[in-house]
Each structure stands twice: as structure tokens, then as C-alpha cells.
Length: 276
Ligand SMILES: *[C@@H]1O[C@H](CO)[C@@H](O)[C@H](O)[C@H]1NC(C)=O
Ligand SMILES: *[C@@H]1O[C@H](CO)[C@@H](O)[C@H](O)[C@H]1NC(C)=O
Image 1: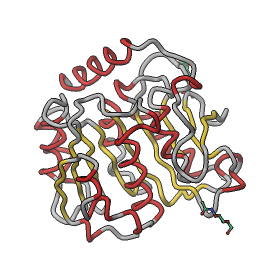
Image 2: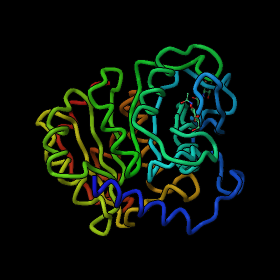
Image 3: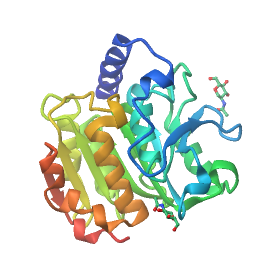
Image 4: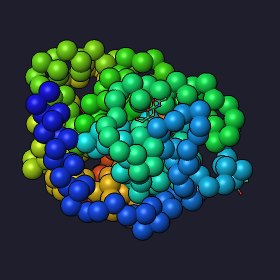
């Protein structure tokens, strides 16, 4: 648990350095995708923040779901607003644990509640949901919450952002048992407090699990707060478009040189096993 505390403390410290501002100011834009996005809430899923395209009627096809755990396990669902708005703008529903500006901490059970809700809702912003295309992801402490959904058959992909299992024991007990779904790591280089954790996990994955790790040398804070979530936002939307929407036209970012051109140092295994 020590590293979990370390992840939380570090990210909290970074977050408290910048006082919370209203979303309009925090949000640099509405995302780079074809569907300008926003956040909303649903009384059926209290204590969560839901990012969706502003005009659902404009969305072609169905919308996969990304359930997200915030850095520091913060219960403020706007903590990574720029990043999640970017993902939603590509025709996704992104559900952060924690309501807008809520205080306190999230739990992995809140992420499971997001999965339950997305799997059973068919109205409102969920009218076009694709409940067969759900990914669990999170930053730092939130990434550990995502790991807790790894054995859920409804979860088709995992995204571990500046995170990893706390201990070698955690790695041994969790990571080799993940089967049949891609697991991608988005890390901040050797100065990232979670670098060793994420790299250790990447190496512990079973053979045959499609996996990728990228390090952008920006440290633990990533680029989530930049306009459109910066390079982490771009890499994330490309990952989810590939594995949840089956858009193979963007896969070369990972299989080819796209990520490297963006400054990521990359390793990859078994990406040919991604079935879309
Ligand atoms: C939402 O959060 C509030 C405040 O922490 C809590 O009292 C309430 O039980 C939570 N609701 C659900 C459904 O978890
Ligand atoms: C959605 O479909 C309409 C009608 O075919 C098309 O004009 C539009 O470009 C499509 N939008 C996207 C983002 O693919």
C-alpha cells in the first residue's frame, strides 16, 4: 500500500498547487474529435461524472465506454476533465468516479458501479451505448482501481496511466492472471514515481496478452491538464478507438512509428492478437 499512498500524495500535491477553477477555464476546448464534448451527471449513477458528445444525435454508430479512476483517487470527477473530454469527443462515453467538484476519495467499487450502470442503461446519454465495448483505465491511484476490474468479463481493455501495482507481490498476484484483453501502459519516463511499477507489470503480463508501454518523459503528472489532455489525451483516444471501436486506421500509432514521432519511448508485445 505504500506506493498507493505515495501516488496519492504526489498527485494531490500537484493538484493543490493549482486552485480548482470552473470547468470552462480548466477546459481548453471541447476535444479534437468530430463530436465536441461536455460533461454531465445522471441521477441513476450518483457520485460520478459522465463525459459525452454534446449532440448525441450527430453520433454515428454506437458509443463504447471508458470507466476512469482519477489521479490520487480524487472524488472530483472534473480532475481530468480535459483528457476525458478529448476521449468523449471521438464518440465515447467516459465515466469518471466522483461527481463534479466532489470532495474525498474514490473506491474501486465506484468504478464497478460505472460498469454496472453502462451495462444496463439504454436511455438518455446511454441511448447509443455499446455495452460490449467497455475499458477500465485510470491515472496513478486510479490505475490501481482499473486493475481491480481486470477479471470482469465486461471489461475488454485496460489502460494503466502513470501507474502500476504497488508492490512486487501485487504484480505477482494480479498481472499474470490478466488474459484475453489488451493492457496498455502510458508512463512518464524514469522520473515518474510509478515508472518502476508500470514497467514491472508490463514485463509480468502473460505471453499472448496484447500489450504496449510508452514513456513520455514528463514525469508522474502526465499531460492530462493540458488542452485536450495533451499527448496523453491523444494516445488514449487512439488506443480506445482501436480496441473499442475497431478503428484499425489508427493502430499504426502503436504498431508503427506514430507514438515515437510524438516523443514516446515504446515497447510492445503481441499487438497482432488484438481482435476488433
Ligand atoms: C455519494 O456520496 C455521498 C457523499 O459521500 C454518500 O453519502 C452517498 O452514499 C453516495 N452515494 C452512492 C450511491 O454511493
Ligand atoms: C456521420 O454520418 C453522416 C452521414 O453519413 C456524415 O455526413 C458524417 O460525416 C458522419 N460523421 C462522422 C464523424 O463520421
